[in-house]
Image (cartoon, rainbow, N blue to C red; front, side):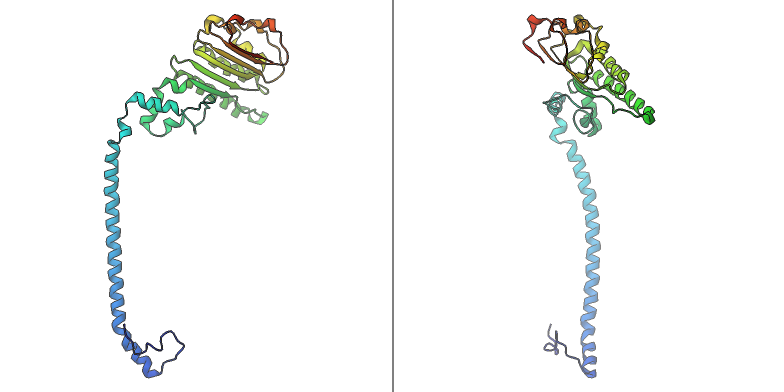
Length: 274
């Protein structure tokens, strides 16, 4: 736009009174046009907001219906189950943690939860950690944690059906040997499905499973026992070590007599004792 004051714009020039009046007159029409444009812009923003709202609703409608026909929803159940199984750790047993499979899979949606609960292999591996040691002022909390842990163990293994089980335990039993015994007792109803055992526990706690015989563990293939503390155990009483399929035995201990180990030595293909 041309202006009779073009040469003065952007300078420190101070207009005279008559020039000031001229400038005010000059700005009447542009100011009205500016107000008109501001109004149009406001109307356009309102129209855009309205269209954006309409688009969001329409997009949600379309996306929700597209989800119904997504390829993942049409996968056969057995394929989904295989995918779920591949989500499990491969270098260790599954932790009882909500941030990893299989528990995490059941937290995605109700359909995945139902599938995870219908897949016994997801629950066939379990790593158990003893609840944290308690102080005299927190006995009630410890006992509550222990009850919850034992119930979770039973629920977990109950979902495994008749699958061979791989179970590992890491426990000290320092503060409450009885708590470790209760954990071991929770495993006993599933002894017929034990396949791999890895116990890092005080040896005296093994008395809890000493009544098991070779007939009670028909699927047991490997046993690893590590000593967490010094202690005595009657190795000859651990009849389950003579399971008909036990081919791997590993023992880490400070004191024991080899002759006391009730193993089928002729059946072992992997043995490590130190």
